[in-house]
Length: 204
Image (tube, rainbow, N blue to C red; front, side):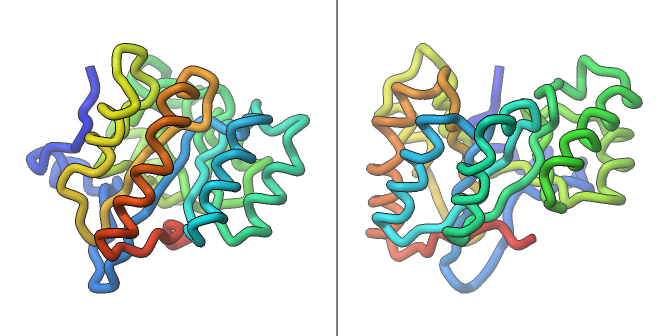
């Protein structure tokens, strides 16, 4: 089970988590989880560049080795990076000490104060601890491109439904999400731009 959009009732219960960045500049925030991927991340960067769009990439520490140049390119092209754990652990299924240590291990490789809990699963105690060091970024819109039962059009619908200034949208530059990412990303970006939104990196 997952929420394509975070219910408003949940947000006040998670004071250490950021679900959106309200603004008056028509800025929205496209994010990518689970990279870097040797083929998909460069493709995503190409698509973003072609539309003069910026984004934020939440990286898995164990994926960085061998893909360092992709991370360098990401930064050089004006995007931001964030931490998505070293081993992509669920906070709900992992003891606090192990979970926090995994995040901090990733932080040794990823220089950023932005952090996104894998699966969006984090306990209050974990969030309280990590928020002392990081800005914990969730989302308002989940494309669900990881869901094998969905079509690219389903993901487009999820990623564009009721978008507003400050929305945070999640895609995945991962092998599992590949067919849906390839079909859904560019149409979604075109929609955002047609609606007058500016695609910006999450404030660091």
